[in-house]
Image (tube, rainbow, N blue to C red; front, side, top):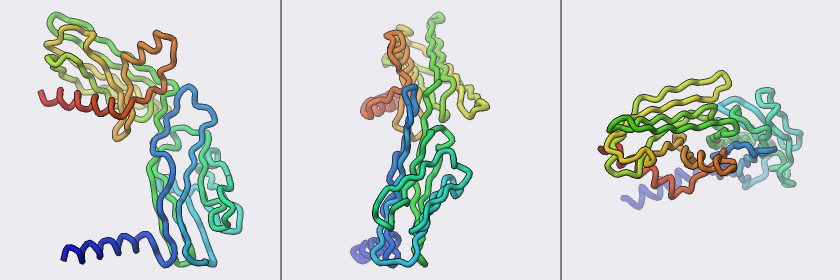
Length: 265
């Protein structure tokens, strides 16, 4: 019975991807794009990976962003760009194969306006299939981060400030002192007119021996990206640029472990 259910599920999965000769494999492209002070002429290449197992008289490929049509190509004709993203799309031939010549999408002038969900749909006569992917833009080109820790009697008052950043950041205070207990206030969040964020997080820590044992980490929901305020300050003091600091995944896991441990107190 289990074997029958497994075979039925596998068949349904295969049928959902192959519709009478049209198979769509994936939407190839980055899930995370980071903009920093050194970003120059960066582009995003998206490829709609599909296969046609038989000759079809008609082929139409469409690209959508957040369910808005932005680009379409009919086989044998030149592609067309819709006005909504005309300044961000580069017309480019990606293949000599007549079934894929202009099926891809190249985005330039990268900015937070390109953050969103992209979908590629393929229409081959009566055959239709689509696939989508979310692309996250993190913009650190003009961001600023400050961290202050000061002793007040037997407590340590903490303040972390992040300005002009996108998307909305999550701020966590951590300590390498296992005895420290950190009580955070609700963050103050301001959405600027340019769609960037200013966020301030304050907290009070007790049982800590020194204010030097604390750090402020800036992260983003569901993204493998992390910024240490102390490391940024150290790099700026050394005269280097810390605007595009990507943290090793193992380090991110370690930080999340520390945070979760502190939350258990």
